Length: 606
DNA sequence: GCTTTGTGCCAC
DNA sequence: AAACGTGGCACAAAGC
Image (cartoon, rainbow, N blue to C red; front, side, top):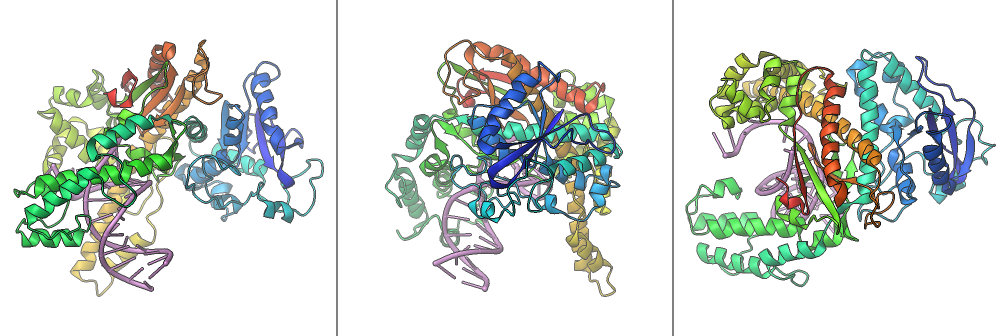
C-alpha cells in the first residue's frame, strides 16, 4: 500500500491511502484521506509504520511525497523512521529523461509544475538546524512560509480534493508516473531504479540526520602539528609564514612577495630562472631548483588550511558530527553530489578525525574495482567476469594473459572507460579488446552513440541528456560552406568529448545504480539487525542504539555501529553487495567483492 | 562594490 | 605520467 502525503493550506497535511500495486492506468485513491495538522504527522507516520505491518497490510506503507527533504527531516527529528518511500520529484526527473519511457504521456507532456521543483536542503523545511549555508529552496509548496499561508484562498474542506491554490497534485502525479513505468520498454528496471533512487533519498536524509562522527580535538591536533597553533584572524600560521620566507629567499625576492598570488609568484620564479610554466604540483616536481621543495610544502599546507582548516571545523562540525548536504542524483550520471564541507573530497589526511563514539566502531566497506565489474556485467562479458572472480580483477586480467602487469591492466581499463587516447592505456586497448570483446565493444558503442548526438542509458534506464545547443552549433559550424579547418577541428573535438561523456556515462551511471541498491539493502538489513542492548550512544534517535550509515563516497560506505554488532554489520554489507549484483544483473555470474575494515578511525581503513 | 572567470587540488 | 570521465571548493584576478 502507498500513502500519499498531500500538502494542504495552513500547514495541514492530507494523508491518502492508495492501494498497490499499481495497475496500468495507475492507482486510484481508496478515499479522500484524512487531514491532520503538520505537527501530528510524525505520530500518524509512526502508527502506520509500526502498526501497519502487523495488522492489515503485510508491509509498511510506501510514503509518496513531493520531496523527501520536505517531510523526512522532521520525522527523523521526531525519532520516526520510514521503511520505504517514493520521491515524486526525483522519479519524474528520471522518467522525463529516460529513453525507456520516451513514449509515455508523462514523457511527452509539456513541462508542468512538477518539473520546476528544485531540491530542498537536507535539513528540511522551516528548520534552522543543519548546514550553515543550505541552498535556497525555491518550491511551489511553501507550506511553512507565512506569506503563502496568507495567500491560501480557502480553508481546507475536510480534506476532499487536490491541494488548494492550484498546487500540483501528488496523487495525480503518482498515477502518471505509474503509467509511464508500466508502459515503458523495461518496467521492471525502471521500477527498481525509482525505488533505489527514493531509498537513496531516505539514506541521504538519515546520514545528514546522524552525521559523521568527528573529533574536533583530533582535527585541531592535525592542524597544529602541521601548521602551528591557530593564528589570529587574517594571519598566516607560523609554519606557512616560515615557508613563505624560504620561498622568497630561494627566489631572491623581496619580503613583499606574496606566495598566494600566482602572477606575482610566477614572475618572481621567471626572474630566478626556475623555468616553470605554471604552478601545478606535477610540473613543479619535474624541476630542479631550491624553491621547489618549500613551495610544494607551502602549497600542501595552504590547501589543508583553506580546504579543511579551523574555519572548516567552525563551519561544518558541531556536536561531534560533520554534516553535509547529500544531493541525490546531483550528478548527471546519477551519482550523488554534495554541498557543504566538500564531503566527497574528504582528504585522506584528515580522516584521522573521523572516530567512532565510545563503545562504537566504524565499519568501512569499499567495493573493489566496481566500475570494470559493472561493465563486465552490463556487457555480459563472461571472460572479464571470470577475471574478477578470484578477487583482484586487474590481477585476473593479467592471469588471463591479456596484458603483462597489473598496472597495465588497470590503466588500460580506466582508459577504456574514460576514453583515453594516449600513452600506455591506449597501447593496451587493442589487447583488452581482443581478450574482452564484449566489454570493450559496449563502451565503444556508447562513445559512438554520443558522437552521433544520440542518447545512452544505464542498466536500469537512466538516460544521458541530449547533447544540446553546443553539439548542434559545432556540427553546423563544421559543415558550413565557409567552414575553415579550425571550425572542423573544433567540431571534431567537441564531438569526441561528448563521446567520452556518453562512454563514461553508461559505466559510471550503472555503478551509481549498483551503489544505490547496495545502500538500500544495507539500510534495510541494518534496521533488521535491531538494536544493541547497551546504553544509548551519542547518535540521535532513531539510531541511538542502532548501527546506521554515516558516510557514502560513490563506492564506499561507513557504518557507525555499536561495537558488539560490528561483525554482523560486516556480514550485512557483504550480503547487500551480493543482493545489489543480483538486482541489477540477475544470474549473470559477476562478483562484487568488498574490502571491509572494522576500525575506530576512518584513517585506519585500508 | 559585486559577480564571474581562471587556477589548482581534492575525492571517486 | 598526464589526459581521459564525474564533481566541490577556495582563492585571486579579471570583468562589470
